[in-house]
Image 1 (spheres, rainbow, N blue to C red):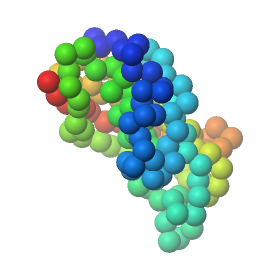
Image 2 (image 1 turned 90 degrees about the vertical axis):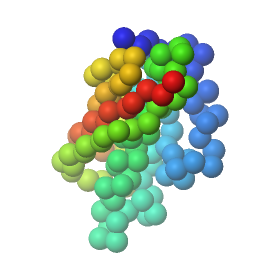
Image 3 (image 1 turned 45 degrees about the horizontal axis):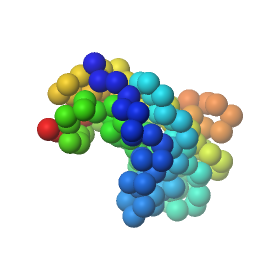
Image 4 (image 1 turned 180 degrees about the horizontal axis):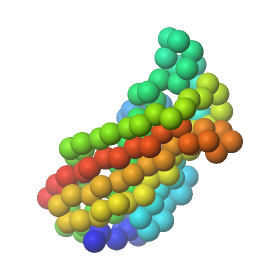
Length: 139
């Protein structure tokens, strides 16, 4: 089982972000611990669908980024990177304003694959999405 790599802290992750999709959507990594990462983003009009509600891609971007950053921080020492081989999301609610929070937790942190689950919360703590992704570790 892979462990948190102490040299890959929040500052290390944040340094990777400028000019990328997580930067574009406003992702902010806020906490990193063994087997978990928390991130957030503030809902703004550009992240809504034309119907005025939160776009599903915004929720997936938040959850996938939280899981991806967590995976980077937990890669085996000899691994170079990872790539997503599968993802799934269940949407249970929405939000039109405020700050969303995603909590990613490792379900399987193996040498060749990692599976991460994320729960996405609306302001006030209501669960609005459940997300799972499988990452292939690259050597």
